[in-house]
Image (cartoon, rainbow, N blue to C red; front, side, top):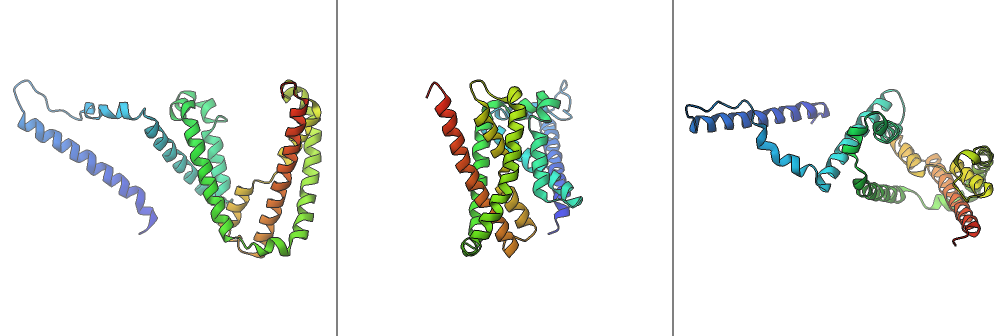
Length: 252
C-alpha cells in the first residue's frame, strides 16, 4: 500500500463520518418533525462531551504525542529533502514546539497544548523512548570492537574532549558574571561550561549512523565507541564538578 494514499484515505474517512452524522440528524428530524422545528444544519451540541474530556490528563497527553509526531515527521521530511539527516529535523521540531518559538510567539496556544502540569508525563515517556532506542542500538553493536580498538578510541576521544573542554572553560570565565548562579565560584562554573561543550549527543549520533546505514560498519562502530568513551569521561568530570560545588556550599 502506497504511503501517498494515507492522507486522502483519512480525509475520505472523516468525510464519510461527518456525512453519516448529517444524514442521521436529518432522519431523526424527519421522525420528530413538527410545525415549529427547523432542520439542523450541523448540531455541534452533540459533541459537548468532547469539551470536558479534552481537558483530562490522558487526552492532553494523546494530543501532545500526536502533535509532536506530526511535527517531527514534517520537519524530518523537510530536512531530508534538503539533504540533512531526519534527526536534525526532529531537533528543529523540538525547538519549534518548545519555549524558544511556540511559547514565545503563540503563548496562549502553547500553554493550552503544553500546560506545565502535563510536562512531567511527557518527560517520562520521552525518557522511556530514549531508553528503548538505546537498548536497540546496543543490541546491534559489536561489543568486540570496543576491545579491539579500545586504545585508538580512547586516544581520539581524549583529543576530541580536550580542545572543546578548554574552550568551554574560557567561555565560563567570560560569562561568569552574567550566568553564574548565586554562591557558585568561577572554578566549578567554568568546569561545567567545559563539560557542556565537550559532551557528544550520543542518541543523535546513533540515529544519524542508523539512518545512513553505517551503524554496523567499522567506521560506525568506531564512532559509537569514541562517543561512548567521551560520554563516560564527561560523567566522571561532572561528578567531580558536583563534588566541588557541594564542598563549597555552606548548606551541605
